[in-house]
Length: 60
Image (cartoon, rainbow, N blue to C red; front, side):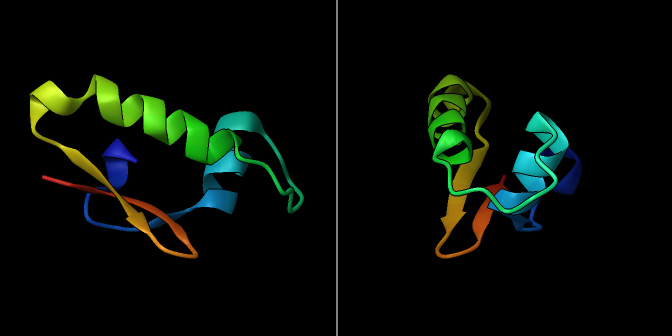
């Protein structure tokens, strides 16, 4: 996501690139991980924004 600031990244793309899932999987792994990551990066003034029904986007 840091390589794609201001571009929405889908949950499927995250699951594929981070965890290697090649098929559509119903999992909260992406959501839970992004939630934890959001808390860790608060001090660097980058916000992880949820794009409802799609995925996530980083905002500076």
